Image (tube, rainbow, N blue to C red):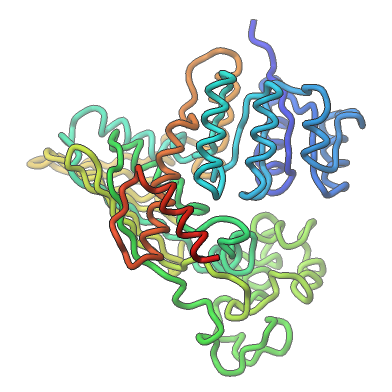
Length: 435
């Protein structure tokens, strides 16, 4: 008889609280939270109350949780990018399986270390490439694997980051500075790199990339822009990146229109007009987008040379009205053209009329990441009960990460072509020379 897997969570931020803990809350027969660690005592207290966690299993840091006896079957690591490696290695040594937020680490050698130790200890490490689990991409994969469009020749993918998402996360927020977290192509787009590998069934040989931080910098600030959006900025009416608009007054994202979840819940919790205004007056999310300490690219193109003569490209841009992904797969017998937000997968077999498949209509009640979050968690619980294999094992994820490291090296070195097998050493040497 299947048992209910036990999980410990390190990091009760957006993903830890609102995805994994929420899943356990809604599915107590599938997952039980038995221990938590976070630097915020309020979050720890809330989790303890919700899940009936004893005080002895509540910690104010990851090290203390991992110094205790093994408290669960699996550890969820939901800490900032640069704080994955140490708890991952300690947890594997202690006998935990891991659910590891992407990216694995902003350091390629650390990525490889975690994969090596997981293999030595025969532990599952599931990396949160949730797009693989979505009805949208699984339908595309199903069509490709059926052979209906023939052999894949080219794939084009577009990551529409969204102007307000980029301003929130990659200019004002936690992923704004590559030295503190990860390069944009790794932090945001290792999802997409993984999808290109998964859909194609190929391996990447060489990577070339171009892109830059072109707009969100001081010299682009319009005349009259204030250092903070609430400090009498003279151009706020014409600025789409105005913090007051994004978090408070916008009908699309503002709290006045009832939007209390992401991104507002990241700025202040609970998110109210008053709490958000206080946060914007002094905190990082109230800064002018032209006067932050960001350095990550706001647009980037990556070209991939894959085995079997397959080519693929990924375009990432902050300058889009929607947060969305588009993908086109071109084969010898047909093509797929798909829009994730619309949920439409269009298949055109050459010589026949196109067919449309609507993944939203055929999958009611889709949740986060196009229902990838809940489906990933269902798969994880099955895995822990001995049913099936991980859809996103760390060995697969390593290749997508190395491709991202190669892309970042290429982007910062004039678009030079980089062999993926050399990505780790080149990226590390490039970082040292930058220092």
